[in-house]
Image (cartoon, rainbow, N blue to C red):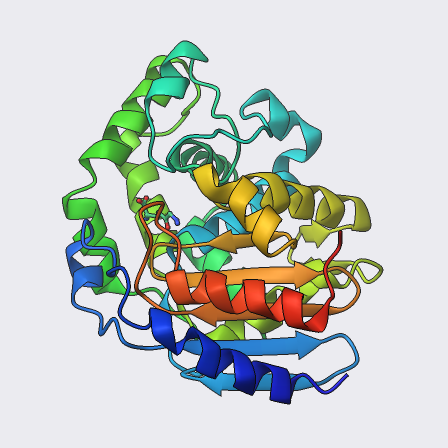
Length: 304
Ligand code: DON
């Protein structure tokens, strides 16, 4: 199928949403991003690449980083990781504290902040230089050696991460963080600050779309079974309290970030990344979600 005419049509159709919502502002550095940008990149397993708009512009991947840190943590701990976090949708905001209290410090899933802080803790406990390891992994999986952290965004987030600090202390209280809270927060903010373009993300997530071709690098093994499980968690938990809505509208496993990026995969077919900074009330990109909804509707391709 030639996807370009469909994508061009979608670009026109989503223009009506161009000024809805606003970019994340609880991280000061993200409030300074120009909100009126839109990019998309689609890579198919048969080797074609399609692009729209600002597809080569780098942006803050934020929570999309949680998929990479989960892949590393799972490779380190195997199924023992599930002693330290569950794999159920939370139905709550990504930074909610309340469930963590009554579930005694076991995060609902790896994609809410509590779960990703535990993944960061696993990396800190098991790797000599977790920041360098993580960066190297993402550069390799996306095939782009220029990808890097944003010192500005990481410092900006850490300087006001009162809620994440509260989550981290609650985890620590329950014995589910083994390292120093500030060290865990620092690594978590660094990983969230990574800057990638739609082209980088779409290429990186090909590893999750290629269900029959395991990816392996420096001890991170995305086996067929692990890819199946990570995709399942993206499907059920990738959009927090909007996971049901994303499944309903788009019908693909995916992951969002408050930088306005969304990446979604169609197993054995394609990986697609979209980016637009204006978010809805749940912290997900408005134009990004709309573009993906139109894409699976107009192509009549979804896993359901
Ligand atoms: O911890 C935070 O709040 C951010 N670094 C990441 C949150 C995020 O991206 C939620 N996704 N939609």
